[in-house]
Amino acid sequence: MGTTIPAYHQKEDMGDWFAARIVDSGRLPLFCFFAALILAFVFTRINVRLIRARVRWWFSNVSMGEVHVHHVVFGVVLMLFGGVSGLVVSRISEGWYAVTAAILGVGAALVLDEFALILHLRDVYWSEEGRTSVDAVFVAVAVTGMLLIGLRPLAWEMPDGLPDMPFFAPGILVANLALAVVTLLKGKIWTGLVGLFVPVLLVVGATRLARPGSPWAHWFFAPGARRPKPGKMARALRRERRWRRPVIRAKIAVQEFVSGRHDLPSPIRIKRH
Image (cartoon, rainbow, N blue to C red; front, side, top):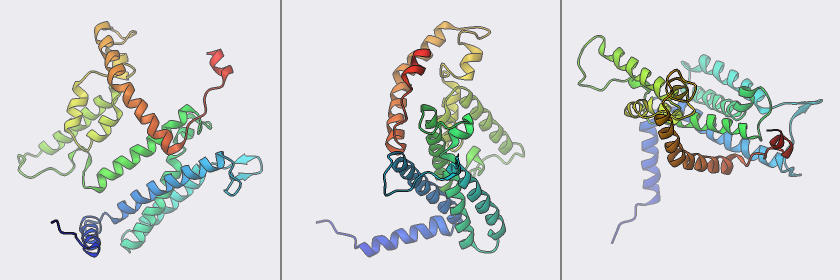
């Protein structure tokens, strides 16, 4: 018969792990930022969905006269307060430093939740373009999470056993950065971002065929390029239909589950197009 580990031992092990991996390693402020970012984003989305549903017992939009004050405004204020306060207290108290990091995380969540508004300079929160905000939050959570578990972008921390040559480490950094730029130009955003922390993905992303709508395709093989290559373009389109579109549909389903379904385009706008 198997043995059952008492609950207090599990709590003790979890506490030991948290102390060793987060507190003792100096990552407590980053963890507080990470947790606050996620919690504030989830609360913000619940809040705006309840406001959109016009629930009587919930809050309404914040307005000053006829001006609708978007929550990005409060996010900017909190980011400034948390960031500047963190600079002041970082060498004084790790506890207060963690508190300011959490404030910064809340502000970042509010700002990134309206990233699409900043990008398009108009209120697209409930339109299809508003999904960009959810993408921005997912990227921030993923990057912060990888930093939290100890990964470093572009191989900042070189493993032991590498040749002791003065230009070896800078060469690795430059090579990884070049591969990351090529991967992003080929339209592989997530591969490029995760590849910053797992460089082998950059090699795969940079050497494989670009996505058909990417800048790389526009420059080198799409119609309108200096030397169009119809065969390569057709292959890229086939890969897009076979592999990319199912992934996009799954991503949209996750986005709508988290943030709510966007408004459908009006019939008048569809007719004009």
